[in-house]
Length: 284
Ligand SMILES: O=C(O)C(=O)C[C@]1(C(=O)O)C=C[C@@H](O)C=C1
Image 1 (cartoon, helix red, strand yellow):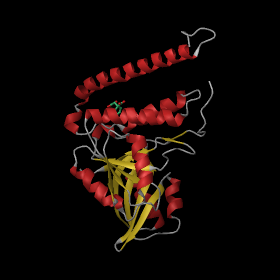
Image 2 (cartoon, rainbow, N blue to C red):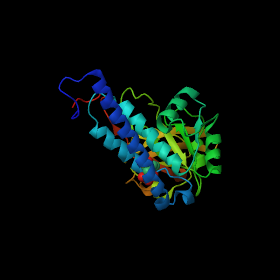
Image 3 (cartoon, helix red, strand yellow):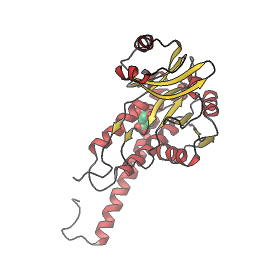
């Protein structure tokens, strides 16, 4: 407000708004020049994907922590999600494939909020079809609803095996009551070696059957059952555990319960969720 007289006119204020808008536009174009150099440094074209979920999570955390004033944080988050996702796309074009078997509207809102409109959105009628599309692509992303019971079948078992797509993020990074695109989703991509954030690790756990006390026993090591699906061969679980928990710890939990395990495989990892407890903007 340094350039304004004590009693500004509407024209004075609009001049200031024009000055700020031009500065923001200049800064975004300058950001684009940095991205041009970053493409060479990161060798994005070789790996096929520029997505770095750990970096994105920490950027969003910083914005949530520093935000002040009357602009709703929803707007800040959506603007920067679009900036970051679009600059990811500028580095290496990708499509977002979404499993809309639980409804198209929430997935479309989520995809547009987190990836904007420049990045193509492709709906699929099953998780299997999303995983297949990502597996066949160079650097596409897939999104599934992360809420229990919202996706049919043990879709996560298709993520097992070296070279198969893996979960690389859980969105939104910043959780809060009344989030405008609050549907929690897992994001998958082909494995990106230097992109993994291991705050939370996800496992496909195949057991012979459900056993009372299974959730309580997993909770003792900080693990949770996120999804479960029964099949003729047994029960498939999608288990989330803190990064410090090892495969041996999980085998130990199952052995302690006397539950036979036929498979435990890591199927990805993601950054710890960050909670913003009030959706209201904080005042300066
Ligand atoms: O930091 C990087 O590695 C980038 O590619 C830059 C950038 C960004 O635009 O800020 C874009 C994509 C990544 O997912 C993270 C951040």
